Length: 263
Image (cartoon, rainbow, N blue to C red; front, top):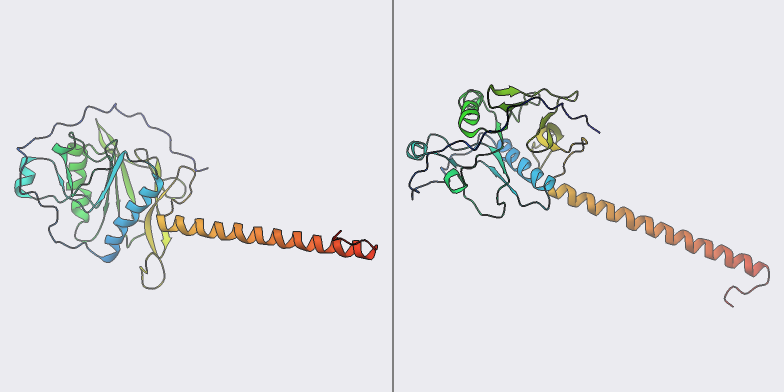
C-alpha cells in the first residue's frame, strides 16, 4: 500500500468561474496544423489518455483530451492566442459526447480539473508562468502538472488553493505526485513503447493506482490477461497429466495384484 499524502486544509471550492458567453461563433478551428515538439511528446499524450481510460474502465463520467483547443472567451476566439493544454481531464461530464475541442460555453461553464503540460525548450517558460497563471485564475484547475519527456527528474505539480493560488505538491519517498482530483499517482516509468525510443528505454509519465500499482495501458492489460489465460491453461494441462499418471500407476498396481482395472 502506498501511503497517500495527508489532506491539507483547503479553501472550499467556489462556484464555477464566470466566463464570457459569446454568440456561438461559426469559425472555431480545432486543428491549426502545428506539429508537436517531437514524436515522444506526441506519444506521451496518448500514453496518458490510454492509461486513464484503463484506470477508469467502465466509467463514462469524464472526458480526457490531448492537444485539443479549449475555447473560453470572445477575446480568445478572436485572437486565437491559446490552443489548449497537452493533456487535460474534466470530471463529472458526459464522456459519451463526441468533441473536436473543449468549448466552455457548450459545457455549462466547465473547465478541466487536471492539466498536464509536456515541457520543451520552446514552451517551458510559457508553461511555467503564463499558462500556469491562466489555469489558476481563469480555469481554476485543481491539479496542474508539468513534465519534460526527455528529463526523468522534471516532474512538478501543484494543488489549487482558491485563496493562495497554486501550492506545490510534495512528492512521496518514490518521487511520485498525488492527484487528488483523479485519485491516482503520477510518476515516470522507464521502458520502451511502440519502439520509442528506437533503442534502449526512456521515461514515460504514467498513472499508478492508490496502492502503487502501475495502471497498464489497454494493450498491456490485454497482454497480461492473455498471459494469465495461457498460464491457467498450462496449469490445467499439468493437472490433467498428473491425474492421468496417477490413474496409470493405480491400474498397474491392480494388475500386479491380479485385478483387472478395467472391470
